Length: 292
Image (cartoon, rainbow, N blue to C red):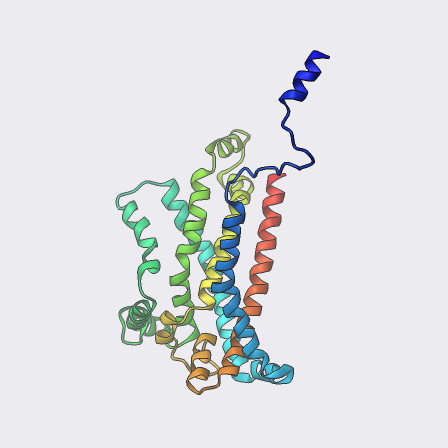
């Protein structure tokens, strides 16, 4: 009886008031409110204004604005070449990250720093440099034209090269830390069980890197779809052949066709969001499967 009385005396007197459980992270309500407000002002509000501006055309007008032959051709160029460039960067970025992590060679830190060059280089400067390099009278363009009869600048191939140039760092910097943290004991165990290096990579390393590869692919694709500065110089900007959607939006704005430009922007937004959503769901499925 005495112990029960002591416990009752030590317990806090609530008098009908339910004590609120404190969060482990202090300031959650304040930081969440700031985050939602910031995202609303910076992301959701401009996107909502874009959708409202495009909705002014009406359903038929919006459909007609995004299904013209010129818009569809630019859509094919932008999204098709962006997907192709992201796929190339996924393979090339994996190889570059593998070399930087697994090998030591003279100048490896310089190579590692050069990977970030597209981040710091203004896109217009990158476009001018690529055009001067791959033009028919450029250093590389002249050789390709004379030896292989291949024209790079002012063709879709030139656009693909520009998109590959600006998207490579996203894959390398996404895969590199995962590869650095990958424990070598798993590969050593696979080798001790008789697996070849190819089998060890396919069954041990690659599954661990696949979510990071998907993330790098998504980032490179998203960067390529909206690229403007490095493309307009090397593209040639021929309607129906080498015209990209961002350039078409600028052209419509210069012609004071603001609703038409908003309609093309909404098209890019919807398709990009759908593709990125599929990639994120696939990445989440891969992580859950690997965790099991």
